[in-house]
Length: 80
Image 1: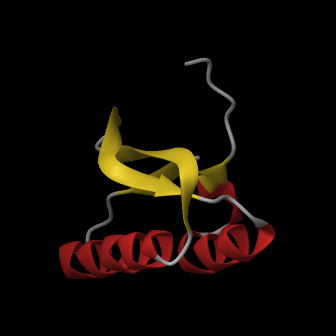
Image 2: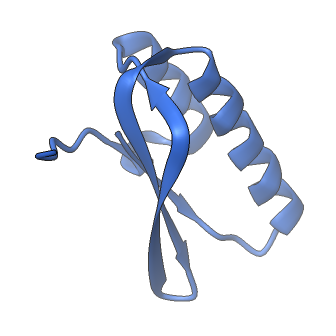
């Protein structure tokens, strides 16, 4: 699961949005790895979230889309 977050001019709102994302992920434990792609000032940084694995399902996707918007969530198959 790849979650994209763009930094805004409102750092407090950005932190709250990230907190909500992490809290939502914790509610769906599973085996799917999670990466965050943070965009700030034209730079992209991809971060793996160690110790966090989710069970991707439509309910999780719906909650994340509500927090982040449709364009900020993608399911990306990766070879291990």
